[in-house]
Image 1 (spheres, helix red, strand yellow):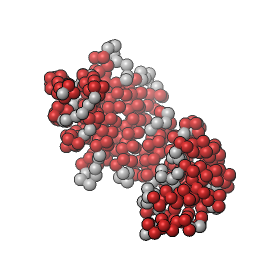
Image 2 (tube, helix red, strand yellow):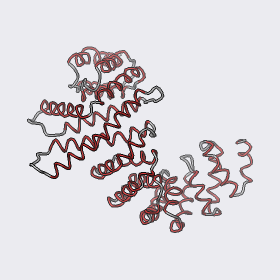
Image 3 (cartoon, one colour):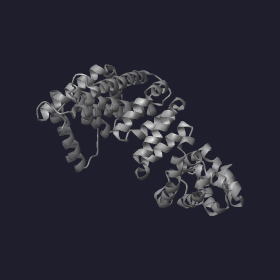
Length: 417
């Protein structure tokens, strides 16, 4: 059928071209020769299309759409911005065209200049959580348009409609807000806590991980703030910090329980990148908590302070031990399939977190895998890997001895051969 359509495409009217073009993405045919050919034909007739047809074509554009079509669509849509509702601008214009390639960047900037102020003026008209999630994601990806006031207004609008937000839109905002200023992130995380717990079983694994990371980071920063304070009796700021830490702790504890169920589930699957991502979540916890001033200067005092704060974190969230045992077990199972970068990530996590987080069996398995794996590395890569391995001072003495006496000699031997 596609072949016949391809043969007859030159006889199609502009309206028929639009109908056929917009039907291909739902059929997952946007990477076909027919899709690209129709896109080229449409580029020549954009001026003949109605506004509604231009919006339909824009929504059907993928990475395979030629720059000529996108450029002409942007030129056609720009004068129509004042006549479109904020919801149309977000879902039918900005969302499908926001990933346009570099050749049309100038035209896209013109569209942003016209559309984003219009959307922000009519923010109260965006009633769907997904509309606000798309808008916020676009704002965060375009720093020139993401003023603190605009960002706060969009987040507040999403929070106001949180009872109607779905798992996907909620996760989208959490993914974007992870890079927001800390105060804004913390405010949003606190406001969304109950809704997140309600949706926790509806998130995909990837969505859950994005949300979980934000809450762990928020709790870690609040714990560090509380530990750094020296309160006076009746200090209102201290009482507020205690309340906020307790509220975030309840949320992270509940999400940790959900994560444990996910790790134990036979139907759920964490990919290798997700396992590495989870390790990095706790590495950042240790690093953030370890950034507090130590009692005395020097690396040993700093490491001792980090270990003290990490133990405090484990005391507050004892579920973390079970989570990391499960992650270690999954890493051991995946060892033969871990890339060199992933093996080094596992060792780095063990170095920073210690055996309370990463089991010795996982570390030993990673070192054995480095010893026996046949790797083709250049001189710079060998130097980088060896420097990294020598920097791991937090491993057990036996593990460091294995690195010095077995792993590194094998690495140098393979390179010299």
